[in-house]
Image (cartoon, rainbow, N blue to C red):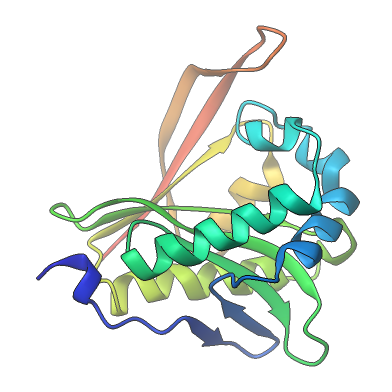
Length: 189
C-alpha cells in the first residue's frame, strides 16, 4: 500500500491531552511556546539545531503549514501537544524519517518549559509511539537523544524503550564540541 493511502487520525486524545497535526494558523501558539522554552531548547544545539535560529511567528507558521502538508502526504508526522481543558500548547513532537519498507520511525519531541516535569510530554510521546505501532504498522520506533539530556532519555525509559547503545562523538555543536547520542528503541512485540 502506498503511504498516502493510509487512513490515520490527525488527532489523538489522551487523559489530559489533545495531540494533533499542526494546522494553518497554529504558528502564533508554536512561536509563543518556542520563545518561552528557548533557553532549554538551546542547551542541546547538536540535537535541536533549529532552536539556534531566531524564532518568529512567520517561521512557526511555516513549520505548521509545512507540517500539515507533510502529514497529509505521509512524509512526516508532526504533532502539537495541547491541554484538553484549555487548548494551551505544552509541546511538540512527532514521528519522523519514515522508512516504510522496514516499518521504522524516529520519534522526537520538545516540551514547553512551563509545563515540563508533569508527565505531559511522556503521555504525548507514549501516545504517538503507540500510534506508530497501531495505525502505521511500525516494527520499530527509535529515538536519538543527547547523552547529556537526562530528561529525554529518562522519558524513553519511562515509556518502555530500551537503550541500544551510545554513539560516541556522533553529533557536533556549533562551537565544535562533540556530543554522544543515546539510541533507544521500542519494537513490535
